[in-house]
Length: 399
Image (cartoon, rainbow, N blue to C red; front, side):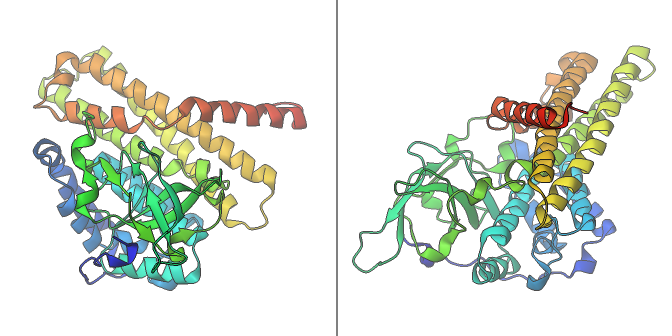
């Protein structure tokens, strides 16, 4: 099967920017939150939730203005960065699995916009306007994803892919995904935008995690897929170009903090139902959790604005870019530690109630505990420490 043989998603009328209003979005997020327990329990995909977000224009809003969007998440101005931050925070509060898929779409649109040609950007945008949902799948399975020139006589200049991706979220919903891979003997990572709607390649049964069940994650096998040169995005090593690679972790961190807010609210409601909110120890735990999350939200928003401003400024100095990336790495560590503390406090407050499957807290704990576990956290913290040490050596101190 070749990348050119995939059927386009069904066309849907797309709303204007004005329709992405606070009121419409609030109504949609409330409906998503109300259905979160059923999506987790029934093991269905998030198609209804994605349709709701599509109807209010979330996915087309991510496109560049020239393609009918307004750059939500592209980092071209502080207003749209704040809007993306607020959206991911609120989505995390409504449903972490839904937030995971939306964050992947925002990330994919940004990667295509950063590294794609005008023709690739236009083609990607047309797919989104027609109802497509994008993703980013980076975790390799065995064998890892590689590509080599096709040996087919009728396919000159095409690439043939071998390997698979694991932890591939949105199987059956994501229409195209940005993947990382190695080309031939190259050592640097490359990017490609590939179709992923062939259900014969999906293995949802490979998702064995207790949390984030509604994401319809699993394994996707690319072996035998062929694609033309137009599927390649940028050149070798572009994916890791600062500040976008490590700096962009603010997006999923915003969703994490929304999930922490949802957990705290569910825990508060459970205490209220049990008439335990007058207990001073319970009030102290609640206040500590709220204060930690509020502090993390404030810090992360500052980091998001700095990262996106540095990325959009073509004249930004290396020192400014390095500082933005270091702050993002430190913020990621802060968010994880605060979420772990919120998880601990919720268990201390509720005891066995925190583990009862008929309580919202149990699902929220499972999803948050899994989602905050990101790849190579120690390596990223070491990278931040190295950058701080280098900066201190240049400047004579850390502060």
